[in-house]
Length: 86
Length: 163
Image (cartoon, rainbow over all chains, first blue to last red; front, side, top):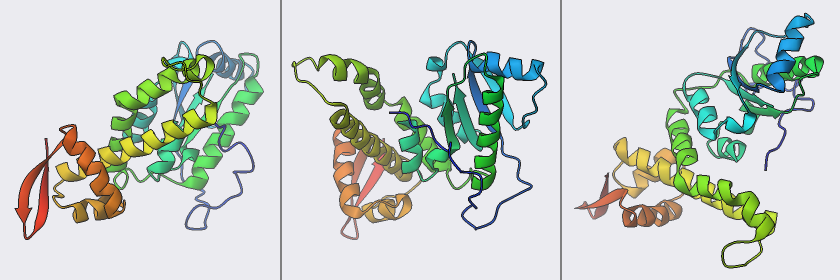
């Protein structure tokens, strides 16, 4: 049912207007599983790996806790995208 | 299912990313975040004002009983069959789910359009971008379940109100 979206060569494609908006900083809400992705994010921090600061994280005890309502509400409340990672 | 719904709403499934990362894979996490940010930079900002009604309808749909029931029972029914002992193959179940998703979304859009002041079938159809036949078919359903009400005729056109 779940398709892993945007994992291949999504970077070089222009948007609808045919231009890549270089100065646009998207607001992304990330739901991270406490045991997997959140620990991964923690490790990334500890090992001083650089990653964009566009994501705002919400730690959940399991990615199964993430309800579709949360995702839709995130978009409704002003986020440009949502990342669910477990 | 949620990605399917975002496609229906015209927002696009690419605004929702799903990825599995283990706790030991810091580099993979960084790659996924970078990729997500890049994709969204290409997509550009989400026009919240334009999609306000669609997002509201999406929220009503994912919070709705029929969809939650179908998603909740999906694994069990595919694995063990339904209460009547019928077996379901995953594709057939998915097509039922997708049809219901589309129907629920369009019904919620109709309700929101009526609430926003559209009273005729024609105005509703124009507002939500669904053809007339489909709108009147869904409205018969909405009337039966008590979500909208037939108010009477005006210029030989039926007028509706939200309940």
